[in-house]
Length: 96
Image (cartoon, rainbow, N blue to C red):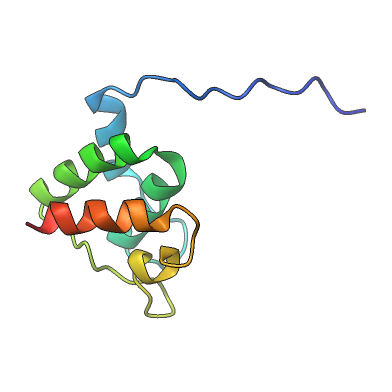
């Protein structure tokens, strides 16, 4: 029997330490660390938090164009996602 459903948290505050914690995540597969943390951050963060994450990512001299095992960047993967364009625009700002 399934347990009670958990309420979805949508207004949770992410401080800088929590956002930066994504930089230390390590892939369990053969993906590059840079691609892995970008993908995890994209999946786990709202655009405002992801924007802050990208500033820390760039400051740490990480690769915004890291690829997965199939040679795709995060940006190529998410370009067809409903909200992907918001995140791609943040990447362009992070590069500037």
